[in-house]
Length: 246
Image (cartoon, rainbow, N blue to C red):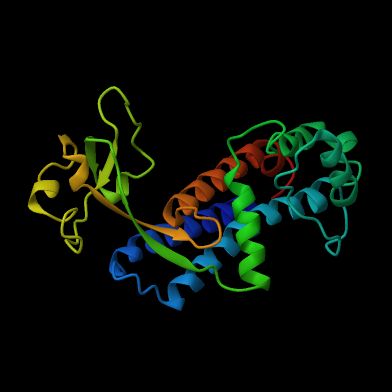
């Protein structure tokens, strides 16, 4: 396998393990006493995820455009118009459209004016900058209730793998196999993993952890970012790493 691609896939796997460990660790802090160590882990995850994108940008500059290693370039995130994208590329990837139109198109196709599938990259950019230059992102625990009454019980490892079939259920309950949570770790829930159960909506209490400044769910944000950076790497595997780098 291409050595650069192998290293990037190792970084992607490392970041994936980080976000899973972070998500799992939240179950220890149901008293809402979130330690700074967990915030530091999140900061480090954001930095690794962002680095993967900027490594791709650097490889384009060096391997495709033959620019100096000292040329500063950044992976474009959340550029809203084609005109803004062209201006960005003139600075970061000069003459790329002429040198390799396929890679230029791949970059363009990661932007909001072409797709909504990578919108979580905007959050990655925001939180990377905030955590690096201002402060660690603060989180809060939120207790919510839901009107839905039919839930499929799943394991934590199944997050992101399940497809919600709205005709059959209204949402998911993630079983707490550590039994820390009194309800999600109850025998009733654990014995129904994989099944759809009916609950009195008034009795369902859902605990989530959210970023203070954006109200975004922390675990969902990390999962969505991980999915997005994995998607981006795959988009550049053939046009960049299988053609230019060793």
